[in-house]
Every structure is written in structure tokens, then in C-alpha cells.
Length: 277
Image 1: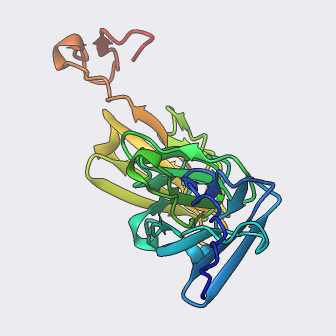
Image 2: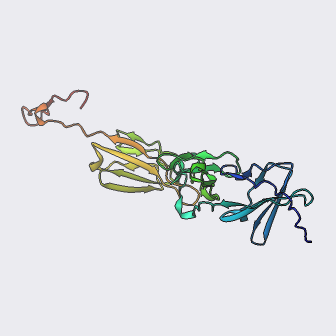
Image 3: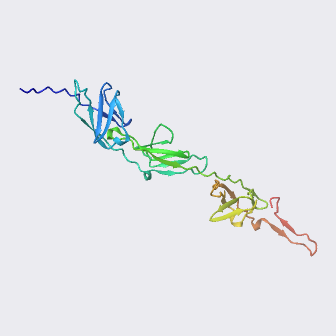
């Protein structure tokens, strides 16, 4: 006689699910033990209802077993669990615009759309991208950017890339040039600095002087003055805008003449020469 022994009942086949946002495997029974295998790689889970997905686990099909106690139950059949790859985000997919000048806080991340997130490096909270893909008015510093998790598409967040917004150079002080209408000069240049003066299509470099004689083509023109930076520790100032009034026109008909009556009397007259002339 031969006896066929009754097999041990199997543990229930696991029904593990994936949380794509927290990057965890869920629905483990804390009172049971489990084994996850991929080839020769094995992970053990017990005493918890979740398991944090490790980086080496992405992009693989894992077998999940609920372990039996070998006395009253045996291991379950395997659940085939596919953990997708992360979406890749490459360095050249995000661009940076550095701060224009020290203190402006006008840096920008470009190509951070609504499918991506960003945060200042060292902070915890991820911030949403924008409809335009431009994240504006950012202070200098390092930023992390990633694809956000999208559970409906079964997408995990990408690993973050880092981008640095460089601080801008300080600007030179904005000029405060004034006009002397009597001497026809621009005043208040710093002799130790250099300036660029533009009016119309003309550009002049002014340095080593406090004054600049107004040239005839400047009358009746708008002008701009910029104090030039050295390009290493400072950059050009913001422009001061001004204008030089046109010279008033004196019509010859306004002034009339009465000639000397007799030679030597010096009694000639100019008429129409009022206090404004």
C-alpha cells in the first residue's frame, strides 16, 4: 500500500498594490511575512502593511509570495508585480535664466511645465510647474526639478535634476546728471568712473571729468546716461533719462534798429531787446 499525503494549504496569493506618489508597495498583512524576488535578488517584508520601493526595484517584474509557516500552511503562489521605470528627466530639458543684477530676484527656470515640479534645494515641499513652463522671480540658488508622479498614468516621479540660478553682479549707482543752462554743460559726473551718453544715434564715452559740454546736435534731443561697470565686480547702472531743450529761436523781425543820427554821436538804438534777451 502507498499513501498520498494531503498537501498543506497555500497562503492566500498577495494582492499588493503600488502608490505611485509615495513610492510604496501597499496591502501587506502586518501579521504575515512576505518574500519579493527578482532573479537572485530577494527582499523580505514583515510586521508592516507597506514597503518603500528601493531604487534598484524600478523597471522590473517582481514575484511576491506570502510565506507559510511550513507546519499548517505553505507559501502562496506568486503575485507578478510590475514596477515601472521612472520617467527620465535630463539636464538639457530645463534651462536657467540668471538673476539680472544683485538683489533683483528675477531668475527664471524654463521648461518647468505642469507635468513637472520644482523646489529650492534643501526644502521638502515640491511646487507645481506653470502653464507657460516659466517659473519667474526666483532668488539665486540651487533648485531641484522633476517629473511629478501621475498615478492615473502609472508614472512615478523622476529622479530630480539640479539647476543653479547665479546671482547677478551689483549695478553701479544710477547717475544723477544735471544741466547747467548758462554754461551749456552736463554736470555731476564722477571723474573716477566712466559713463556712456547716448542721444539719437550718437554715443559718447565720458570719463575723468565732472562736466560734459553739450554739443549742438544734443539740443532738442532726449538722452540717456549709464554709469559703466567693470564687468567683474559691478555691471552697468540703470539708465538716467533726460532731455536737452531746443534753443529758442529769435526771429530777426523782433529786433529793429535805429541808426546813428550823425557820425560820432553814438545814438543808435536796438529796439525789442527785452529782459529775456
